[in-house]
Length: 217
Ligand code: NHR
Ligand code: GAR
Image 1 (tube, rainbow, N blue to C red):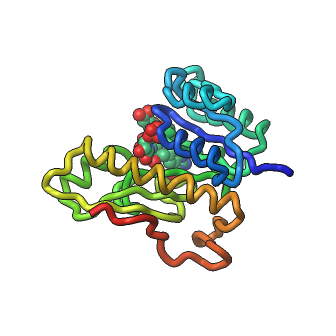
Image 2: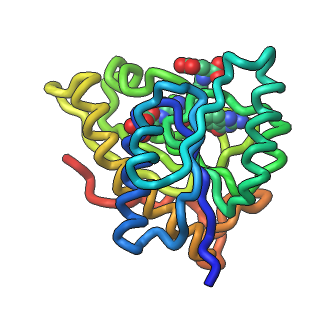
């Protein structure tokens, strides 16, 4: 029996990584996280990986002279691992188009906004400043366009007058921990394919993102 292999890229706390480890330990992931790679050596997610008996690698972008050189080293490392799926989980380095091209269709990211709203950084602050009624998180295939690849699924919450950046971040992360490993399990079970024009789910073109979970209103 050969299990599907998953590599997870992180930069920080790794709470989404932990949600993958937990799902794997429940026998629900449909694959095995073989390796965690961080571009920051002090990322707590590397400790989470070690605690779970998963290979943990620090590959610091500051050790490389250019974005291209870092991405090349990262790509060569990943290629030796031969993963079926590569998960960006709070990975904070923009990837070059050469990198993305090499692993096209196998790269997922979770982004803390209801894309196409708020690509880039400081998403919670921007949603609050704009007094949005809804906010949330999106899982998408990674393309060379930053946070612009085909959206697979989203979880939403309502913002209200008591919401602040801290509470919203916590609430969004709670949703992410449910959503992201679930979407990964769909991919690992062969239900999800990136196509030229978007996402194919269970043999059909996805016409709009899957809305996953309860609205936290
Ligand atoms: N790479 C590509 N090609 N496409 C995407 O969609 C990507 C990507 C790399 C990362 C995650 C993304 C997010 O979910 C992601 C999606 C980092 C930045 C950023 O500005 C922006 C978006 C995302 C990740 N990074 C700065 C940089 O110069 C560094 C910021 C820092 O270190 O704090 O790379 O939000
Ligand atoms: C997550 O909320 C994720 O959506 C966000 O960072 C957090 C990582 O938390 N990602 C980005 O902002 C990517 N630019 P974690 O390290 O605890 O999983």
